[in-house]
Image 1 (cartoon, helix red, strand yellow):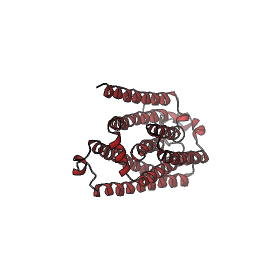
Image 2 (cartoon, chains in turn yellow, cyan; image 1 turned 90 degrees about the horizontal axis):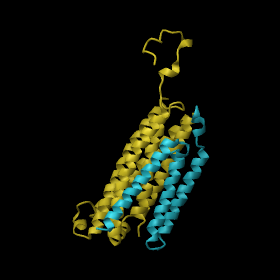
Image 3 (tube, helix red, strand yellow; image 1 turned 30 degrees about the vertical axis):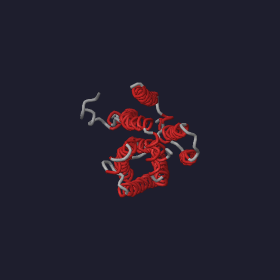
Image 4 (cartoon, rainbow over the protein chains, first blue to last red; image 1 turned 180 degrees about the vertical axis):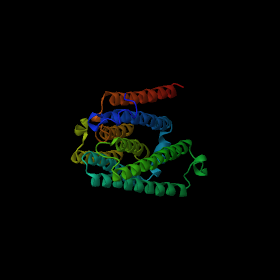
Length: 216
Length: 93
């Protein structure tokens, strides 16, 4: 190690600039993955809960799934897959120094996230208007399995929706930093990690969609 | 720098998106065919395939070193053990 300040007075040719900027791309990425593992276990545990109750109350779960609107599920699946493509394309674009494509990709992904949330708002709103919400009389006095199905539906899609909001915040930060040239092909770890988070949110939805909407 | 080889072509990303959309159509189509208990397993297999595509291409798993790959595999194994033991417990109560 060189003591701080001691080398600054050396002529430029004798400095060792690579020692002054220390970036550990591998470490940053591994750290992000470690965090993602905790997310996998978090959603994994909720899916286990779903699986155990599905095995016990299969008919109630099927009846519950029939009340969900498939069209919303399919549209939101397509939206999230496209948004993941946009984020992956923006990472490729940053590495190729295609700034405009990178900004367009991030903007597109943010737009997709927004549409997803609007859809979710209408979907939840419709269910709540029908008297299907946690603690509603219709569910509490109805079959136990349906109460569990919709309880899990609100908890899992709600937690997923929260992740969408967090992911959109991270993508917005990335977009501003790409615009300001703070994220470039030489320094893209932050964009990479925000992208990983967004893809994880997509991964979770890939399992939510068939479990809640396609069980018939 | 090694970053040069880590660039995934736009075309590859587009093809993967196409495959993901096709698989979505397949899983929706399969849900209309009544195969009894098989339906859930088919849906989960298609979902796992989609997840694999996202992981390997979009999340750059194919470029990652051993640390990320094996820690990921360990997490999935841990999840499998957790699911297995919980079902084991519930089944013999």
